[in-house]
Image (tube, rainbow over the protein chains, first blue to last red):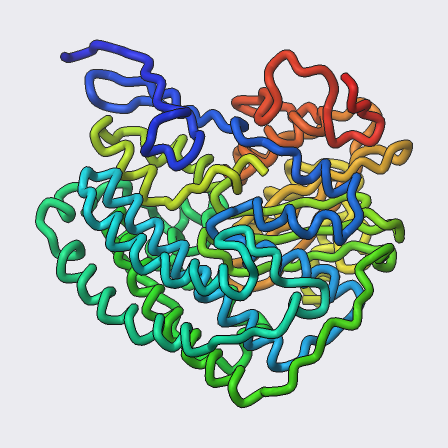
Length: 363
Length: 137
């Protein structure tokens, strides 16, 4: 097969492309010589819609930017409005938000673990991961009526107070045992290591140059975690997972370790919710809401890296301009570099390891 | 943060300081290269484009220094030709950002390696995020 050149179209309907990612690969034999990602199959015009809708009309849409981590985008949008109106949240609401965000992060990472293993041909971990994720989604459904696009955060607070904390404690009891199971089954599995170790090596300098953040950057040995400077997470004790692996295997290990850290945070948040018993309903009247003229930017550490919401207001009912920054968008761009020089049978494993989710890319 | 901003403003002659952001008048590409090299702003978080209608399209470069953990915003307003120099040779993440702005705002980035539509189809008329865009196109 020497010097036999081929252009290969991968996706957009390939099950391993996690939605609708199309990659056009130039092959020389089995070696990838160029990769061109093609996105936009899920483009809904999120930023255009923001300019046409009032703030409260837009709020249910923001969960859909990343349907696996909807709470993060709700939080981001609510936070921008709260910053603009200079509203301070009560302790109970902050603790509830932290708890839900971290549960959401766990659910998102669990889905990734299942899907990634499925990409590599291991079917059963998918069912294990979904079994645990289901517990979290059922709790979300109980409190918000929705499994994924929850629309539970509102400007200045929550839709209503939280209940049934016992369910969360039950999740906290079950999850750590299951994580040990994953580690026993997957982490040191020789086939898994062969498929992932030393594959898709990403140096920290390249990652920074390509705007990669989140787990992918931290696995390249670079400590960058917005939660450490985020006011919402003040007083929570957890470690940032930084690994020196730089490869797909490391990215898997980092996510498993991150789940453990998130469990710690959720436990602390539950304790905080129990000590802060006073619930204050939001005082913001959402109908005809306007925010003062100006530029507002807020950032959060989402499961797929740095996410930010930038709003320019001209004092009207809708923002003049709203821009989302999402982690996956830059991860897709990185594929141009990361896949070149690797072999076609590793392409799926490498692309999968970056945790790309397409609604976040296409917006 | 402030001291650093004034420092940059003094050294780079073609800019003014305005509400915590540096407003560039000209020489976009070289200035951003200089800021990255001399001040350690090694990550481009994103490029934000804003259509100010008759005041032109503004590009906001949100830079971040991983070493000093600080942000810097550089603002640059385009002339009516809607052309800007590409910074893809300085920040690879700009490949994605500039393509999106080309698609949604119709800004032409000079020296971009792969400038074409990102979300909309190749034969789409108009640029959706421009304020003069008509939805029925």
